[in-house]
Amino acid sequence: MSWFPYSPLTSHHGCLVPRSRVFFIYLGLAAILLLLSYQILLNRSPTVSATGAKIDEGVIAVEGEHFNPDPVQPAEKELVFAAMQASNMSWVEEHLPDWRTNIYRADAEGQDVLTVPINKGNEAMVYLTYIIDRYWTLPEVSVFLHENRYQWHVDNPLYDSVISISDLQSDFVQEVGYVSLRCAWSVGCPRELEPARYLRERPDDSHHPAAMEYPDRFMELFPRAEVPEAVGTPCCSQFALSRKKIHEQSIDYYIRLQRWLMDTELTSGISGRVLEYSWHSGSFRSRSRDPFADFWYNLVIFGKPAQYCLDQRDCYCRTYGYCNMTDTEIQNHWVWRGLTLPEGWPEPKKSNETPAQ
Image (cartoon, rainbow, N blue to C red; front, side, top):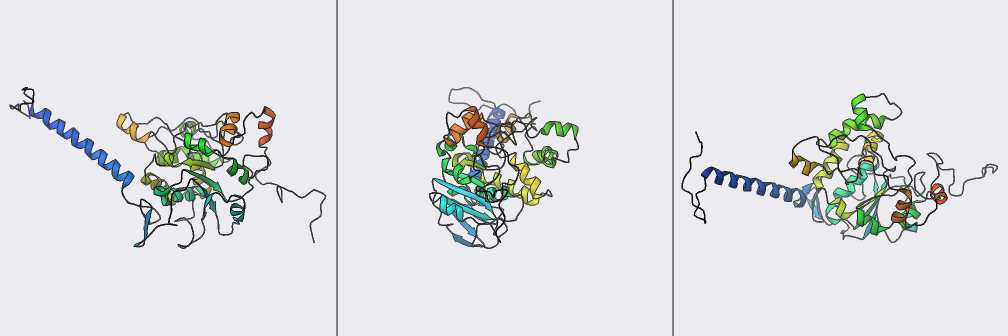
């Protein structure tokens, strides 16, 4: 028995079309229109961020008041710093006057300073807050950094952030979308984590707590993506993004990541490290067999392979313009000195020098 009896519905060709077929055609068209409308709303409608701000094309409403932040006009390039109230950031204005600077002081409060909704997740909270705050007024290139000028992981012989920022090739950032500020493979490459194996075997690796937490947290953050066998990327959460790359995800996506940081019971050190090894990642296979789910969920943050370690010679050339480097120059460009640079770097005290009285 047919639930939809045939009736003489005549097409413009004079053919009879079953009513059931017409019904399902209209149903399919309605579903497509609903999905398109939903995606438009996600990407374009005003959104309330996790900081309580209503964001709409450069205008923010906080506690009922509308104002233009700055007023912000999209710049060509901007720096985003994860800092604290005690951080001395004078080096930025002194040495990088051509960059617009956003210094988020994570332990500050009030509307007269850039800050975060809660001081958790280390630099990850700052990075996400900036993306949410500025989603509609992003510059062409945003560079995300830690607060100090000299840091052990900065990829040049002086460990000097001024050098790395000044030499960064913005055209390369706009070409590929996501660029780590570190080319050296020491720490992070080629394999830093083995999430799938840790998920299967559950080893006790107390020396690497982030590796133990990563598989479960990955599934929380990206529920449809298959846990990768290996994750590798240069440390240490300093990178540049193009506006186009950030806009590949809706603002709600970044709000969800920020909410995860706010709600997780993990320490800031571990939750920040989980995102450190997730920023670059993408192109994971979906655990679902639904091709529609694959379409929506295969992009994981900034869309690079789980193991994203560029050839160092090519990386230095394209990221900083240091082309034609010899093997010796590459080897000596970044040298491990430990997690703390010598006191007074880059002019450390001599071993036989007595402290000033």
